Image 1 (cartoon, helix red, strand yellow):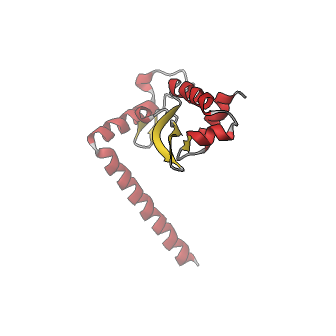
Image 2: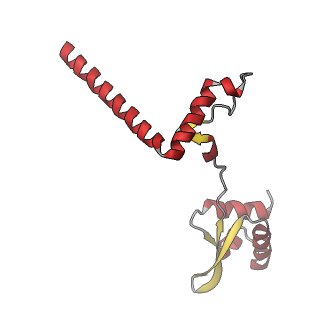
Image 3: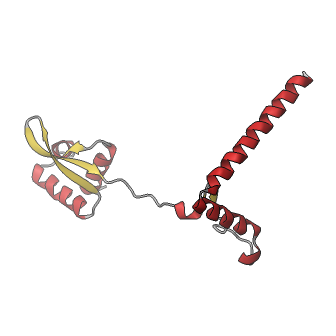
Length: 140
């Protein structure tokens, strides 16, 4: 592992950031070499650097940039994931029941009806659970 990778790993381990002077001490290199490594990491857009003070000396606080995670919001209709994603059926979209249901959820979500539908379904499930519990208690 080269020094650049080691420095980046040190920065990533410190979630709240680490002072640059800590890195060059930990890697046992001089401050100039550390500055060059930090510059490379900044150029690669892997870290951010803020001015800070450590033990009365001006230094930089280095933080790893958060990895951007893909958003799959466009594939969701409420809590239902797109039925076509990963589908291996050889079907025609016009006649696919799963796709029609997903599109229906998508349209209901746009009009605000989906939340109401989910609340009604949850209330019905709660009522059914309550009835099952009452029947179980009566049978005891």
